[in-house]
Amino acid sequence: MKSHNLLFLLLVLALLSSCNSEKVEQLERQIVQKDEQINQLKDQLEHLQGTNASLLDRMSDLSLISQQGAENISKSLENISAQYSFIEDLTQKVHSKDSLNEILSMNLKRSLNDFDDDDIQIEVQGSIVHVSISDQMLFETGSAKVSSEANDVLDKLATIINDHSELEVMVQGHTDDVPYTGNCMKDNWDLSVSRATSIVRILEDEFYVNPERMTAAGRGMHFPKYDNESSEGRSQNRRTEIIMTPQLDQFFALLESPVLKN
Image (cartoon, rainbow, N blue to C red; front, side, top):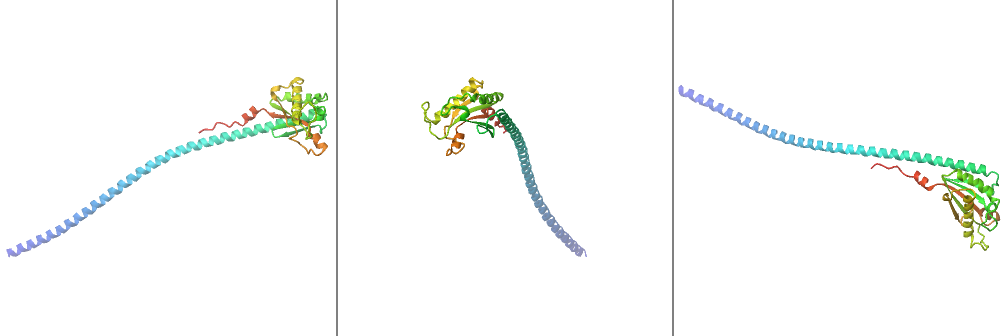
């Protein structure tokens, strides 16, 4: 009886030992799996931490770029504003200059109203005022000598020129295409230049126009206003033009662009 009990006890212990061994092995396998999961999670965490650091670096770079871009945009807007103000101011000055030229033209027409329109023509071309005077009002035929009748018109012109000290004055001589045949000059070039210098001298000597404001020039027969085929056309082409323009330094000052920021 005792032997049977002992065998039964040994059998029970063997079964318990077998069950415990399986549980231990199962637990060990679970521990191994958990360790593997932990290692995977650690790897994922390190990867996420690295990604996060990279994103933070990029965000920092983007912040710097954004700041630089904002500064560039701000400077660009300031430059555009400066350019716009410059253009607006230039436009206003040009309009003002054009208005002054219109006033100058009206004053000339009013002052020279007593003379025939065929002998004196006044027109505004952009920023330039042209006064075209026929040669029969100013000169003896085929000569650069100024006639006594010219003093009246030159006196009135000089008064207006002196009233507008901001203007430069070019006196420009023109002829028709009939070759010069006199003995005093070589050709139509000489005649046109000599006539211009004769007018300049009278404006300076008799009517006190500042010579530093004046230029004498001749274009001979090479800039006709009308067809030289008719006597009327040739008569109109024989002329002296008084050309009034803004002083070049003032004109270029208007075109100076504002300094832009880099």
